[in-house]
Length: 55
Image (cartoon, rainbow, N blue to C red; front, side):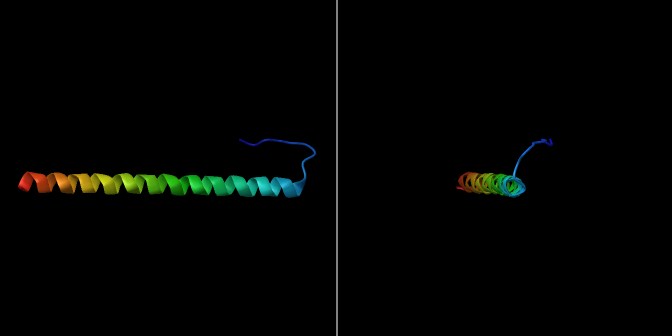
């Protein structure tokens, strides 16, 4: 969604765009890390479950 603003300093607008891009990048990274953690925990749980069944 594009916003059209009047009388905004171009330097301020560039800083706002930079912050927005960084936040989007950080959101993607945190989502990936969260999914990776869930997968690791699932693998550990499955591994422990398999060990208990063998004992």
